[in-house]
Image (tube, rainbow, N blue to C red; front, top):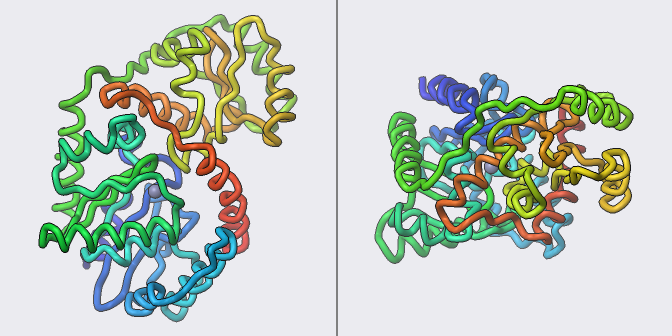
Length: 359
Ligand SMILES: [Zn+2]
């Protein structure tokens, strides 16, 4: 059964950190006018049938004939309400925010992931040029608001692409986000992912080196003690060759000092705290909180290492560093711009609230 195959492949992608981390990415399958799409709040790595929502594709098509508010919050509320109404009877979970995009891609299967190596291109200064040079007919979608706006832009570009080439595009690169691949089978999609990643790899001038480096244990413990005042979560510490490179001075740190994709904001905070060698960690932490209204989730101490408040921020920071290194082969890192970072920061609150309400 094809739905069973989708679950199997979703788990495989979700368990492989080179494809996606934590709750990121989503997959879908279409059969007899029904879209099976990942529900919000489930991680691909452990997903089962209950992690998918069944939706009426014809009803979803109706969303494109409606007028929505210009105001971000109102519009997303309106669209969410309509999306919820497109679920088949008996469905209770909330569809992924990217469900609309899954619905409009005319493929039996769609797999959307955030591989660091691909984001080394989508989060790079010359990302757009690299995609057109390496992947010919793939679509490049510039930084746009996720959810309805993203789906709307992709729909327009797909139509334009079909008009110009007579072909349906099955490969979409989203700036500062990730990649969508559509196909008539999951084997075809797997082969596409492999070829995309190999192609990018062949262009790399350098790969991240995460071999461990030891740090002064007393200093590490001292910083952990300070951070424990601010968090009940476990404080994790890591140092490796790549962190050493970025934590050497403020100029090097600038290349990992902001957010590449929405997931980085959601899990690791909108930016890490930088503490220079001679600075006081507690003072720097409090100044960050006073200035930004939130506490940092990642604290980087010059020449010492990376501290994570809780377990989730650390893998996302590692991912940021990997993306930054890969991007060096494509003109250097390109973070999301400030308005988009602000949008995601505000939007995340909404997402979280709805998630809690659903579960
Ligand atoms: Zn995504």
